[in-house]
Image 1 (cartoon, rainbow, N blue to C red):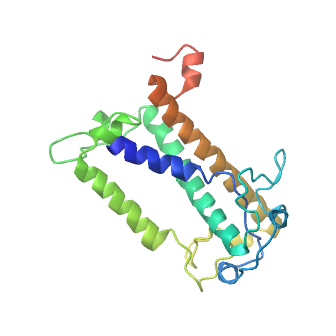
Image 2 (image 1 turned 90 degrees about the vertical axis):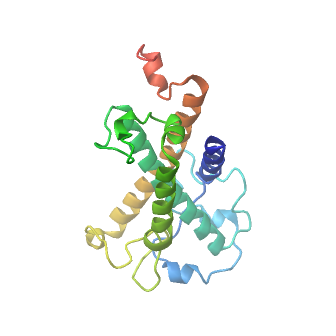
Image 3 (image 1 turned 30 degrees about the vertical axis):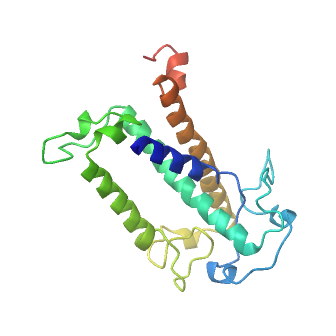
Length: 217
């Protein structure tokens, strides 16, 4: 049951991987009030529309879409990309043999004893899964969101007047480049984590390259 629920959620999240982005000069507050219907070609110059595919919307999600609709799709795409990048990094870390020290519960179940990938879902105590879900919910509701009036400049900008890391010192060109890099890394990560999960279910070996090089098994 746990496996089927998580599989469904993952496939739904990955479906948003290849939609396109928001103008650098438009603020989230302004975006919320733009309901004018636009043609798909109106978004062809957005960040993320670049060679070799250019503007790519095979499902027609942006046909006659408003700016508000576009911004919503971009927001979801960026968030899923960030989650997928963390998922890939975490998967690679534990697959390399690195685990937290100590126990995951009072019974003494160690982090190191928890298997990698899908098998971890069944091995983690239900209380642990509830804690994970509660933490994710906390981040979703109170941390990873755009707070109006805090100076955020674009969809997915969660600085909220608190974090910066020198972003405001970058030129508009540098900011656009970094946003494009994040977007495309997120797209790749969504496909990457889905591939790891699928291959693990097919033959128990998520890293196909290991099998090809003779390290599988």
